[in-house]
Length: 183
Image (cartoon, rainbow, N blue to C red):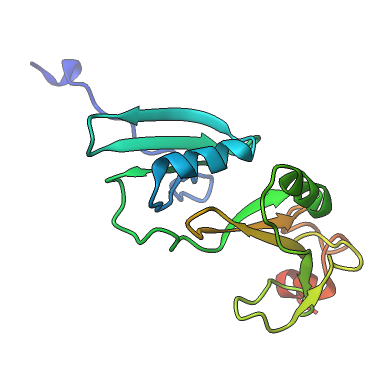
């Protein structure tokens, strides 16, 4: 075989800055009961992509939230993480109140809306958290949370305009604007 007939793998695609382009494709979450988790994620209205097993010791189930390019996978013998240990996974929605109402209609226990008074990002310790959505409904500033049956924690975050935006953009809290663009 000569050099002309060798098959070569293409180089990884890169951005204009030369950085390899990487897309978040899959989150693997740990669950204790695959069938119970499947019922829960079906109840969210997510698309079932696959449910595959090879005997009693291996199973994968994959769902994709509607509109998302990233999927969620759980199963048997696909992770050693403790069931319920996946926390802080964020789903972006355009209207956190409407999304919360949809989850409630589906029978999901969902927190009340809240926002971070610091205007940047909610605190995991609960400090600086205020009840209700951001009063001005600024982008990235309003949240609700819910858990799957194992306690894996999800956050819905309202995003109506994408960062970095522009210096004159008023879609973001003053604090977030200053963190991105400076005072």
